[in-house]
Image (cartoon, rainbow, N blue to C red; front, side):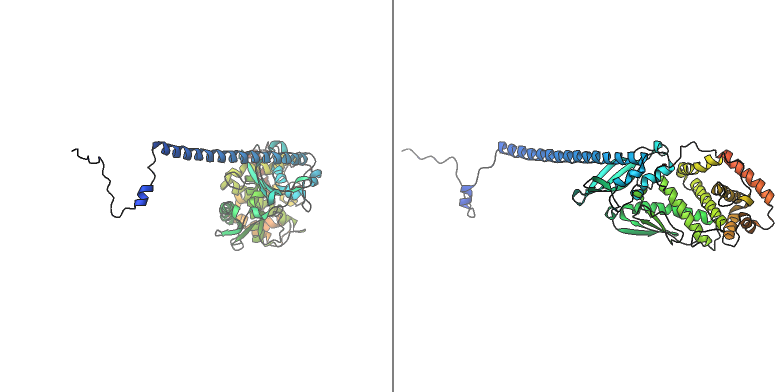
Length: 431
C-alpha cells in the first residue's frame, strides 16, 4: 500500500501571531522598486535645484535691470549737475531743496574737479513701500583715492518718474550711543561700528591737541551726534554739541569706514568745537574781535595738519587737496605781511595765521601755543597785542617778523603748491 509523503515545508504559527496580518502582508520590495524610489528622490532634488536656480537668475536679472534703470536716472542727474545745476529743481520731489539731496556730490566736488571724479555708479537698489520709494547705493571714486566711496540716495516714484527725496530714517535703524573717555557719540544701528571707529580717532586727536591747550580750560567731554540730514554740518557757534550727517550721506568705504573727506571734516569741526569751548566762545566773533577769529582759524588748521601728520597720514592727500587753493594763490601773492598788518580782511589771512601758529609752536613749544590760546580769551584785539600778551611784553616785533618770514619761506619751499586740479563746481552751491 502506498504511503503518503510528508510535505516538503511545514508552516508554524506562534500562539501570539496575528493571522490576518500575516495573510494580508505585502511581499517585500525588490531591487527594482528601490531604484525607482532613488530615481524619484534624485529627480525631486534636481527639480528643486533647477527651480531655485531659475528663481535666482530671475531675481538677478530683475536686479540688473533695476540698476540699469536707476543708472540712467543718475546719469541724467550727473549731466545736469556738471553742466547747469539750476535745472536740478526738476530732479527732486516737492519740499526738498536740490542743494540738500545733492550735497554729497557738492561735497566731493569741493575737493576735486569734476574731471578727476568718476561719475556715480549705482551699486544696488532696494525698493520700499510696494515699489514707490527706493534706497539707491551709489559709488564714486577720484584720481587721488583709489578706494571708492559709497553713500545712499533716496528716491520716490512720481508721475514724472523717479526723483530724489529726503532721507528715509528707516534705513539707519534704531538710535545707539557710546562713549570713550572724552568723546560721547550718538548714531544709529547701521553706523554704530563706523561711529565707534571714528570716536577712537577723535579720542587720539583730543589727547594730542590737549597737550597744546591750557589744561584749566579744555572741555572734558565732546558730544558728537550723527544726524539724519544733509546739511547738519553747518554748525553755528551757539550749538552745544557737534552734529554731522550720518556717514552714508557723505560716503563710506566698502570696508565700512568713513571716506577720507568726511573724516577730515570731522577732525576739523571737532577741533574747532574744542578750541571754541576752550576759549569760551558762545557766538560767532564779530569786529573788533575779528583778529581773534582769524587766529582761531589758524589754530584749527594747524591742529588738523598736526593730527593728519602724526595720527592719520592716510588723510594727507585730502589735506593737500584742501590746502592747495591757498598754496597756489599765495605763491603769487608777494612777500608775507608783518604781524602788525595781519588782519582778518587781509589776503590769505588764515593761511598766514596757520603758519604763525606753527612758528610759535616750533619756537616756543606747546606752552607758547597754550599762552596764545589764553591770550585769545582776553581783551586784546590786534594780532600784535595778542602776541605781546602771549609771548611777553618785551617781544621784539622786528626780530619776530624776520624769523617768522624765514619760517614761511622754508615752509613754502618744503611744501610747494600742489599740482592737484582743485576747484569747486562753478555752477553748484558750496558745501
